[in-house]
Length: 276
Image (tube, rainbow, N blue to C red; front, side):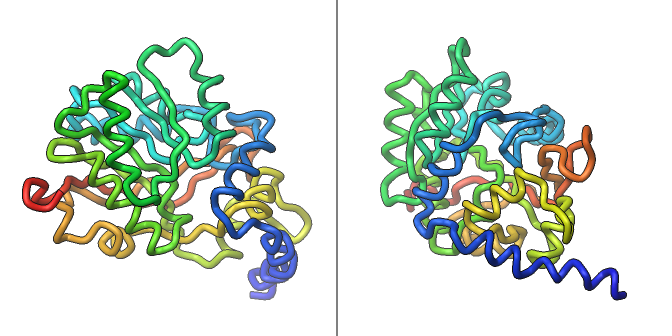
């Protein structure tokens, strides 16, 4: 019992680390990505495992529910690791991120891929979804009746108001024919238990985890309850949902990705013709 409680002695250090995180999420994310030197399994980005293992767990449902003739928009693309994998499944993959530094890195890491593009865009801003849909059409993405949308690890770091705003922009992108696939962390413990799960101890915190605590919004959980609030049944039809697993880079083991309990959902806009 005493050993289990010792981890809570980390609280003062966690508070000190997170106290300096910028309040403005634009600043926080751009500052974070400006500091990233390398990505992948041995890099600086906590949620980039450097493999396609997590995506392979999604492919069946992407094939089952999303129209392969439509383009796909990867919201919160970061360095484009998932965008590039989506480009193998859809005619065009557009990655979108609030950080200009993230998009610059994604462009560099995606050099030579003809059906991938990137935009700097805050997808919680009013009207962002409609403008993005127009830009996708101009790029030849073929989003006449909408586009598919992929969201991985974004909603759990947003507040309720921003979640709702993002959902409304996603609705404008998806239109009548697009579908939305989302996958988010849904860890049921508190913040101390969460960082302990990812390898933090009283003696040390893995460097990528410490960087995220120091500079980024504190993550929450996103499961069925949170999805129902952000994507209400009056505007969205739930096609499928359930548990999944989110992978991070190796933290508690030198060569094996760490696993976080997660939640996935597939949705479509309801009554699009009546309420765009």
